[in-house]
Image (cartoon, rainbow, N blue to C red; front, side, top):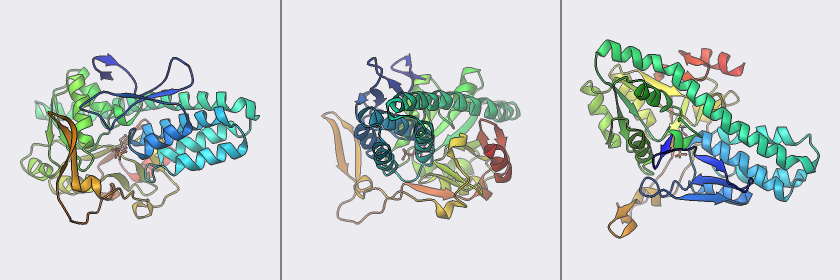
Length: 355
Ligand code: MRU
């Protein structure tokens, strides 16, 4: 996808061939800053502090984090310490463990001297596959948008929540892949972009869509009900951080309310996921660890003014709660958009993705 007019991925190997480049998303969409990860600890900190974020990208950064660790200490003990450090960074997105498990399984049988090279190869493969998988999600879901455009005879209004875009993956995004494809193929489209308080990941989605020229409107999180009631939303497509064995969907806080409103107004509610986000080992949404972030994120707003990036007080002196994700029950999901096709039920999803 494009940033500053140039096609790029959200993670890359630097020209030295071993350090890792990412965008520092704490400064987006106001300023494009890149950062270089030199040690495993840099990768862990970038994930924990949300310099990098989004389930698939967290997995990719963690995979490279293990590679960076193995450059310094390729012993079994070094591998296990790095694995545990990276796994502790964020609790909810299952892609983190998926990627770490995959790199560990690839390097463990090897002699220590061979491990770093193998870890880099595995991390690169995870990134390349993520790009292909997201594109496949887009191709699989595109007919839903095409069909809606045909039926309506006008622009399809898609609502999305959080940033399920290329900044949350290696490229394309999950929920945004069909949107980019639809736009590129001339299907009239307009995207309602939820702000997604408190971290405002919707601003990242809006930034992406603007960079690619996709018509969109940035709306407050509470606007969705009214827009659906008025028939101004044709479908909702969200990403996810974990889909459990029974099809429950864990995604950014506020997703569940959108699903409830969509059900009340007969608006299809789709969830886009790569197979790396399916967690067959967790029975249902109630068992997913929901990240609780700092009260500060709720009490303060962050954004630029004439003097630079500043924090403005939203509320003073009140205790806050900040659950970062919620659970949408499988019953509210109209379909799962995957690289293997559109799955109508959790059973179908589970059969296809376990293969
Ligand atoms: O807290 P974040 O910004 O990492 O949360 C990101 C989301 O919730 C996305 O919607 C999710 O990762 C799926 S999109 C690829």
